[in-house]
Length: 315
Image: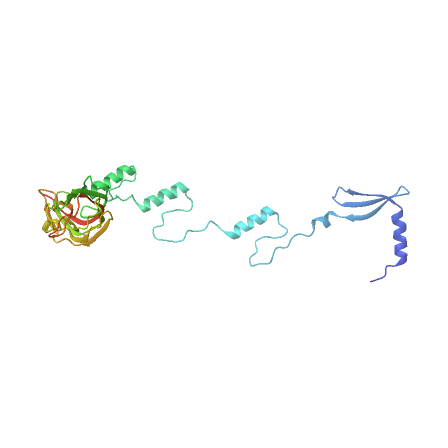
């Protein structure tokens, strides 16, 4: 480290011992003077900071091509110079039939755009924007037309209808049918479960899924179940129109234990002329051929039926 001159330190120490206070003052030219009040009552200037020192030199702009501002100019002059350098308002990108004009108001521009777009096209839709949701749904329903769905019987808990005026899928659920039978008898379940709308009906397929059970523990007779366009007669074995919508299944009864009966099939007769009398669906349960019930009691079917069908029309 460089050695400090001992004589300088002695002089500095002697000088500092004579200072009583230090004060600053600003002159009329904004210069700052730092003054020391000495013990002997005199003042001694220590340092002078001029206004020029505080302000610093005028800024020099970064050198660039066509720099429009000048360091010694006023701010206003430099802003004007920048405006001139930037130039006039931009010209819109040229396009075919540009409807807007730079120097017009926003409203005028919107009007020009509206005129360029043209009038609102007339809608060919059946719904109206200003109408309520209910009104529009009614308009759609009227356009589509009636669903031409059929009607379930009281023995069916629910009928789920999907489709349109032509093709339908009907699912009947919660079906419960009963019949009191006698020992050696041929009583049958032959209940109406669904009525199609009047008109020509085409059956594409049908399905039943359910169980048959007896209240008599000794019931073990062979039993048939099918869907038909006609009710089964009180006789052994299902046949003809008693089974023409979905073919029969045959299973032995198991007393009070439910026995499954399921089948899905195309009908043996596809078209039904129901223009005078509506076509119907019956669920039929009967003893198998050349047999009879083994015990007196109540036979019960519980399950569901699904129908896929088309409405041809009516006259």
